Length: 235
Ligand code: BJW
Image (cartoon, rainbow, N blue to C red):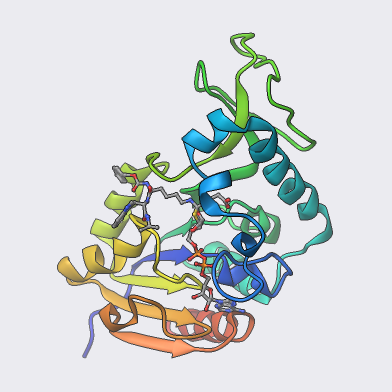
């Protein structure tokens, strides 16, 4: 008989928010069809054209007001509330739909739209409205606030906490991510190396599907509640 599951790490990507009306990054209708990634998502682009980069994130921050968590976010929040073992939701998403659904054990590894980061002192502050370039930091007073987003070439947040959770996990579940961006795309291989069981829930096979012990295809709004029922039913 398989060992019981106690510690779960869940990685989520843009696909979990797609049914809420948040655009994914790649594929038809993707966020970057209208924007070249190198125009908006690198430190070099921020230096070259701060107006463009800030405006891109201002528009996405404003759009959060018109989207709601979907059944996949709600199911993970229920799992977080009811699962008595270890659990960590690591999201690559910069929207706030996991926390609005009620998730607490959550890391935003690529940053958050509703946060501003001071490029001078590193302080963060909640941010709800437009963030023009040159906005003063309330901590150090320098006019260096930028969107609190992890750009290509920058180190994602809380990597030590994520590594520790993966190390202690019995089950790693990847939901709604293409597996195109590292280091998140490599978590499945890290998990496998430590003998962790791995499951993928995605609309279609991702770039790394072959690494998973099991891969289920379908919309997150259907697959995730089903899987959460299975897990909580087995406790
Ligand atoms: C559904 C669905 C439904 C749809 N239901 N599913 C060469 C080789 C390897 C690596 C590199 C390399 N050159 C450079 C690198 C590193 C680089 C990288 O990975 N580049 C790749 C392009 C190759 N990575 C970095 O630079 C990262 N930093 C780094 O590596 O630092 C070094 C370091 C790390 C660790 C320790 C020490 C040092 C930083 C990466 C930052 C990524 N930032 C972005 C933008 C965030 C802000 C924003 O939102 O604008 O994060 S990029 C973008 O991609 C965003 C996402 O979080 C990320 C992943 O995308 P995601 O979520 O997978 O979305 P999609 O659209 O790709 O996929 C959606 C999926 O959902 C699809 O599969 C659909 O089928 C599915 N789906 N509807 C279920 N209803």
